[in-house]
Image (cartoon, rainbow, N blue to C red; front, side, top):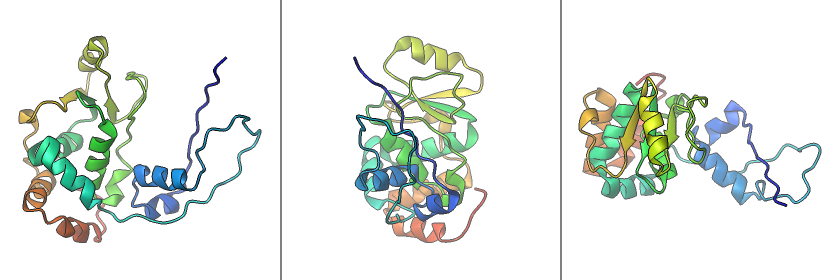
Length: 196
């Protein structure tokens, strides 16, 4: 029959900081190093692995792609929602990991660790992720919408009217992305920020 197992990476904070506190960059480094290959025989003890490289604080290509679709206003609204809502559920998107990676790239590295998320697990109120993704299942959507404190964002909606950027940081993100000066954002991230 089939065998199912889960691989987890436990990364010390100094190693995570080398990758700008971006779990997607850590995942890319682990995949590139061959550390997450499917093992036909699971060892009784896992040996520590080495992660090589580092990553810049801002992925300019990703932010440029997301600025065109779903758009600058949507992305700035997503930042506003992430900062103001205790729990978000993303619906209506085929590749939610790109949106979540874009959100992380819009936050200072010191603040990224406060945003737990899941991109592939089925939504469950028992999993206390700050950002979850929803399948195209209407029952799952209704369950998420009924959960107190959870806000459902529809990624297929061109605008997030309820989350227009009103706070300083989301407005800065909107301005930077509209002007295309992502290098300014990278310069801001070189300054340590523990609060937005």
